[in-house]
Amino acid sequence: MKFKMLMAAVLLLSGCSDELTLVFKKDVDLQEKALQEIRESLDGVARINHYEWHAQTKGFLQQPALTIKFKAVDGNDNYSVAQVSELLVGQFSYSEKDVSITRTITEDREEFLEKMGVETGQKFTTNLYWGRAKANVFYTEESSRLFGGRDNRFVDRNFFCAIEVPMEDALPSVSFSYASDNPNPIFAQLMKNMVLEAKNETTIDGLPVNEGWENLEIDNDRKVAFIMFEYLGEMNNQVDLVSTSTPNNVSKRDCLDAMKEKLGSTLYGVLGEVSAMDNVLTVGEPTN
Image 1 (cartoon, rainbow, N blue to C red):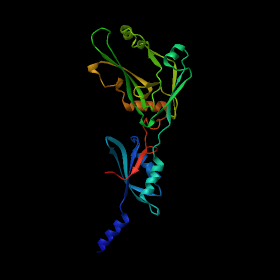
Image 2 (cartoon, rainbow, N blue to C red):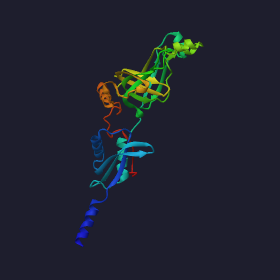
Image 3 (cartoon, helix red, strand yellow):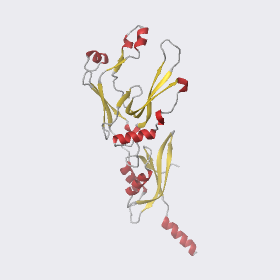
Image 4 (cartoon, rainbow, N blue to C red):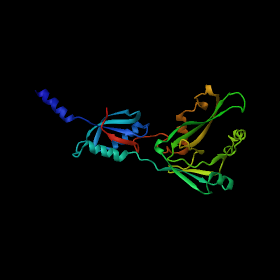
């Protein structure tokens, strides 16, 4: 009987832990720092006694997540799971960044301005969905063959360290070809690759730094902006022998480290060093 009473007392004192799952916007590469941030945010309220990093599945999407088990600290008479959840949401919730890209027309040649239907000094701005920006090794690709010759196509790939970020709206094109103006198909074919570009300046606003990249490229068809950093080199292959390797085997990690060192910033976590801060999408009960 005494043994049973003792066991009951131990269970009563230990109690059951409460659980919450934090779902993150970006992969957390600084997991120890993230856990320390969360522990410090709950100081005087609750004590974490167990945790598990995992992926949470939502439809076809897998998101990084952390499930914590915790108990009230002694002296916290107002303890509740809702109190812990509110603290975590208030401290770590992700906020969309106000980043935009602007193209300013600096061209002063009337022929170009009339061709594009714009004016010197005209500005065009669109928002960037910075929360969906991705840094990686990217390439531009050009296919070519000898005019009128055999169909021996080759692919030239120019590789870059770059950041790809979706745009809310397309920006007006600043390039055009005279090929579209000529009804002669032979002339049009010869002029197809002779693309002219009007003078312009493209800038990004809203980032922690406003310089350090080599160039900005706009893909209006996909509504995507590329922030180009380091040129890595060119690879040339036949179409059916295209290699997926990169010049000098440069990896994504190499690019991220080089960009981060050059900028002195992670650009809101796009270049890594992501913890819990400004990264939590939801806080709720575990789903599995």
